[in-house]
Amino acid sequence: MLIDTHSHIYEPEFDNDREEALQRCIDSNVGLLLLPAIDNQSYQRMFDLALSRPDMVRPMMGLHPTSINENPHWQRDLALVEQYLQHPPQGIERFVGVGEIGLDFYWSQEYKEEQIEAFKSQIEMSIKYNLPIVVHTRNAWEEMCEILEQFAGRGVRGILHAYSDGIESYQRLKKCGDFLFGIGGVVTFKKSSLAQTLAEMELSDIVLETDCPYLTPVPHRGQRNESSYVKYICKKVAEIKNTDYQTVESITTQNAKRVFNL
Image (tube, rainbow, N blue to C red; front, side, top):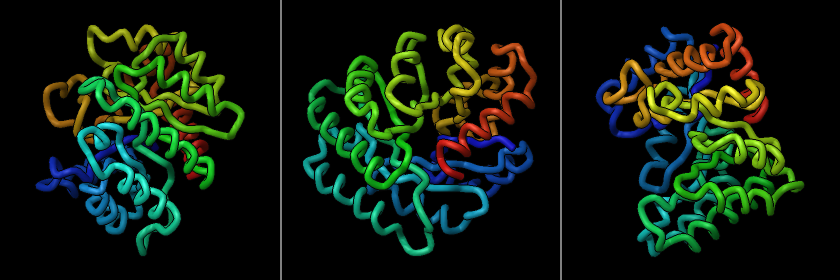
């Protein structure tokens, strides 16, 4: 069985064919989808899906870094994250992680301090509630490494979502805690440098993800992404690592089960 460790299948892009997309997952042997949260504009959609399909999906809770930008109420929204971690909605047994959290300085450099404060606060929550973090990083790898190094030795663990930096950051981040690295559709792109980095990474350090409906892998690049496409990522990883599909499937699934306590 494959696990898509990062799926936004609850988003409106799937409103017309969500059940069909879930069936395509089953047909592709993708048995479990992990749902990172974004912000309070989308929590209820995620909850509704988790309640309707507990056989296939597991939700997380967190505040995305870009949802802090231009948001005068971000501290209130951050408090809501902890409220949900303390008391999940009725019918949801638990959240499997604190995510999607992190740093994103691509769109604006104006909210760095706020993003860093929110990120550190949510790392503290993950330690308090003994949950892994799922970390979004864009145009902020140096800052990300520095912050996670501050938490080294405190039990912080999780996934570096959509890993896109080099082997040096990979080695540096591994020393910060029990971290795995999310490999997604970018690895299938012809001009991606991620393939070269992945060749030097250990299979025991990676999980597979789609980030659907974004970052669609080849051969569907340019179209909407969906969780069933994690099979293309598995195939590409096997090619890069010079091993077979079943080996990548087995190891990455066990990695995901361990870090998320599934």
